[in-house]
Amino acid sequence: MLIKLLKAERLKLKRSPIWLAFLIMPIIPAILGTLNYSANIELLKSEWYSLWTQHTLFTCYFFLPIMIGIYCAYIMRIEYNNHNWNKVFTMPVNRMMIFISKLITSSSIILISEIWICILFIISGIIVDIQAVLPLKSILIWCLFGTLGGIVMAAVQLTFSLYIKSFAIPVGIALVGGISGLAFLAKNFGHIWPYSLMAYGMNSNSPQKIIESGYILFMFICIVYIIAFILIGSFIMSKKNI
Amino acid sequence: MIKLLKCEYKKTRRKYILFTALLITIIQLCWALYGNYTEFSIKNGWMMFLYQLPLVNAIFMPLLSIIVSSRLCDMEHKGSMFRKILVIAEKGKIYDAKLIYGFSIIFFCNILNWCVTIIFGYIKGFSGDVPIILYLLYLLFTVVPTFAVYIFQHTISLLFKNQAITFFAGVIGTFCGLFSMFLPQIPILRKSFIWGYYGVLQFVGLFGWTKEERYLNAYFEIMDIDWIFFTILIAICIVMYVIGKKLFCGKEV
Image (cartoon, rainbow over all chains, first blue to last red; front, top):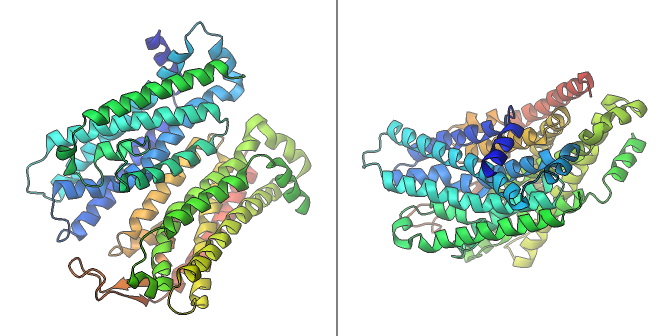
């Protein structure tokens, strides 16, 4: 059933140029972050780690949360247009599955975006001729845990977009969420706040901490949040007046 | 025009557009003003704000413009309301009315932001009187780039039914503008994007800061104001307005 729902979601998004933004957006920090790294090479001594910070700092706090917010709002908006919720809810499908299929759809674009960020990061590192060995394991961990944190954010945003009919307000919430994530990270609560988890997972602020902190608790919290928001989303769907 | 503006007001009742804009402004103020104020900060507070706030504006003002313009235009796209409105008013006037109404919300937020910043400076007890001429210039250099960004957002929000496109275009532009502020060694970069003009028109610089000594020998200094690019920005506003209006008037709704 889930596979069919995912196929349906893919069909709904067919010919929509939204995914392009997730490919274009990481190019900007890749170019400008690399230029900034090259300009301040005497201050930024940690080579690959410093370059990673330049690439991901603003991406994690402001722009990726907003992009995820827009994508989730768009996925829900398709259903709000032309009373499509009526058609969706009359299908013999569990409402939780509908929410999960939308979450998987948004998660896949987050994963693609993360992989693309990593590819651009490696290319940039080669261009600026970083001599240190490429921390491939760390990059993989940043990418995967960043995606996991991003899925939590997507689950929250999907819930907001489901509850709020407007397109812009959930995006505004994503902006506020991204900023609040910065504040929570600064106060060392980054591992428990849903909007900090992506930046925490990607270690955009201090990449070296990745090995020290460990990720078991991080994974546990992410999974708890994802399950909680799937349940909340399904509950809203079951009570929703269409 | 007055009737069209009243019409806009009535359409936006209970849409919480002003409320959303105020909420974003409050968050911006909290972020900009919160922090540890050292002796250096209190002594140089007025100049420090003029140095720091354009960066915060470069993040928040474009995003505020995206949200307000999208909210105002999206309600017309829903249910093909443009067809109904265009029966009673000209396309060009609708474009103008929405632009004036939307930007007045942004302008109000700008003024509020400016006033709160100055009041906060007094409460914190910054040394000396507020350099009012510099602060008026700062207000001007915040409002004009925001107006340019708003015209752009307003136009694409009217042209595209799919508001996700307008959001993505705005966010990518904001990203370019923000990053260009971190690359002062490539000035052409910030001058190439309307979102980068918060940095182009920044006229206070921090000098003498080093990694080792930090603020020990640091000082703020007024730099030359780039009036040529300020004029270019105004010209960009006029060109975007004319092209945007023409495109909207030529579009089938």
